[in-house]
Each structure stands twice: as structure tokens, then as C-alpha cells.
Image (cartoon, rainbow, N blue to C red; front, side, top):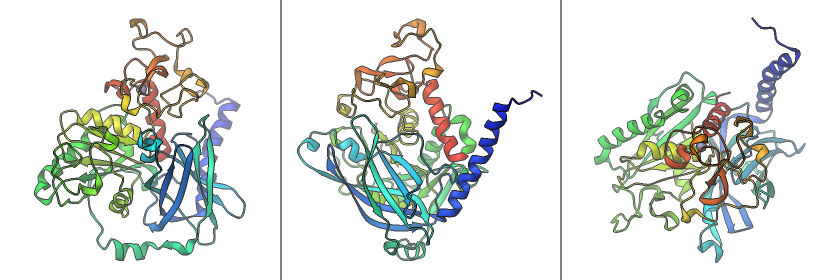
Length: 432
Ligand SMILES: [Zn+2]
């Protein structure tokens, strides 16, 4: 056996100590459950208002208890909790949202918008006074705090009240992939069927099973099966199908889930986030996939928000792609979708791990490249299966670069090495 050098010993000691320190942070500040904060995010480009509308305890906080501070620097927004007495940061999480995407629409250039959002955070102990802060990105893509509130604990509805009054029956759950891991050491992925009536039950069960198997159809997810618990919620809609399509006869699409979000025909989303979270309040949930009862191509995925997918011939690839937006925060590596133009700025380094403008490439995948690979890298046969810096990504043909010529995030082919690493790193953050 090889002897450890002093540096390796120190590194090993730090790895052993860090979870103990963080776990102590958990015990000091948090109860063994979650706190759901419903808020509205309103405003327009450069103007953000965050208004807390309701707070309630939920039975589970299912993400890691050791990785309480988000060091990934991903997402358009950051939600942070501070110990009010010392000012110490005790929790943070990067998120993106439909509001952020709405900002690039024509409507947003003329008027303000208001969107439902939800933060799931660990529930602070009764004796700990906590402040919540909301941060947005500045023009250089650095987080800038917009507002900080003291959380008024008297306004939090307790888990018992919520369970009995608002949600009298725990939903029926179907386990589709079981792991041997504890709740806080795995990814809890919840599948929510949308637009299935009781008469559609048989198809719904088949679609949920198919969706769970699609999740493990591609690497690196295939190898991460032991870290991802998949549970489906059995629930039914009053109308069959998904609204928003041309000539659709559906009056009230289930949970407000519709095609044609922001006039993009295949983009399936809902603005009814509070109704959606009501479905998973009683379920350990780190990520959601809305399984949509429609065979018309479509889907969507926003980081730490949710992913949607239709059920048809390309669903396998679509959900792996969309889930990688919503779970791992990966950006699109394609350059040919004008409807999404405007989300990206050439003046700043993007926060997605798999996209660069070369403004600060030191944060990105340079360490995965051969030293003799040129930057930018020509998309030629010589660099066909090599990590490089290829122009064309993030809906732009110029100025944005991707790490590989082909990838699931570009053309639904297997994941490139950079995306593969990002997904594994994210799963590790939940599983350690
Ligand atoms: Zn990639």
C-alpha cells in the first residue's frame, strides 16, 4: 500500500472534519423538518420585489444536512438564511425561475410581471432568530442582495395544522426506484402525473414506469441509480390531456400546466407553483418531473424549479435533457433557438458550468482540456472527441462556447465529459 504524503493526510483529515462541522451547524440551527416559504417575485428587468405570502412547516427537509451553504454559484437567484444575532450565513441555495425567463419576453419590456415562487429551506429551531435574504445577479453575474427580512415565526403554520386541515390525506405514493440510502443522503426525485383522469389510470401507471426507466437510460444517471430514489404521486385530473395547444378544448389544464408558454409552442410550464408544491408537501422531494399526458412533443426545465416532459417517441432524450437543466443547472449548448434569445449576455461569464463567454474561463473546464488544444477550438474532425472550446451555445452562434462538439445539452447525443462531471458533482452534493 502506498504511504500518504503529509498533504494527502491533511486533505483526508479535512474531508473527515467538514461533514462533522456542518452537521454540528445543522444541530445548532435547524429542526428535523422543512420550512416552505411561498413568495411572489415581481418586477421587470433590473427591478425585483420579493414578497412572502405564506410559510408552513413541512414534514421533510430532504436535501443534504452537511452541504448547507451553496458553493456551486449556479442559478439566477440566491436564497440565504442568516442567524440574526450573529449575522452568520447558515444556509443558501441558488435557484432559477419562470420569472427570469419571462424577463426576456416582449411583454416584460412594457410592463411588470408577478410570479409565484417557493423556497424549501431547513426549519429553524424555535430559539434561533433567522433572516431570509433574496439576491439577484448584477451585470457581471455576481449575486447582489435585494432584500433581507426577519422571519416572523408566529406566521409559520405548523406541520400538524397543515397536515390535518389543508391536506387531510397523505397522497398515495409509488416507489419506482428504491435506494438503501437515508433521506438526507440521496436525491429524492418525485414524478407528478399531470392531465391523467381516473379513466387514464392504466396509461398513467405505464407512463410513470417508463419515465423512471428513461432517467437511467443515459450515463452518468445510469451509474447513479443507487443515489436517486424515484417516487411517483398517484393523483388524478378532472380533464384528460394538457392545454395550451392550438384548437385545445381543455378549459382548466391540470395544475395550470400548458404548452405554448411565452408563445413558444413546445414549451410546457405552469405558473401555479403553490398548487404544485401542495402536491409534494408530504413527500421527501429534491426535484420534480411533471409527466404530461400528451403525445405532442414538448417539455421544459428550470434549475431548482421543475422539469416537464410529454410522453412520446423522443421522451427519453427530452427528459434527460430537461432534467439536467432543472437538477444540475446545465445550460443549452445549441445555438439555433431565437425564442430564447435575450436570456444571455455577452458581457458576463455565464453561471452554467458547460457554457463560457471566455470572460472568465478560469472557472470552467480548462483543467479537462489537453494543453495543445487551441482556444477557441475549431469544430473539425481532429477535435471530434476532445474537450475544447467550440463556438455556438446558449442560443447564440457567436460569442458563446461549449465544451464538446456534441452533447445531450446540444443535440440529444450522449453527455459530454463536462456535463457528465457537473451531474455527478451535483448528485454528490445531495448524497454526502
Ligand atoms: Zn455538455
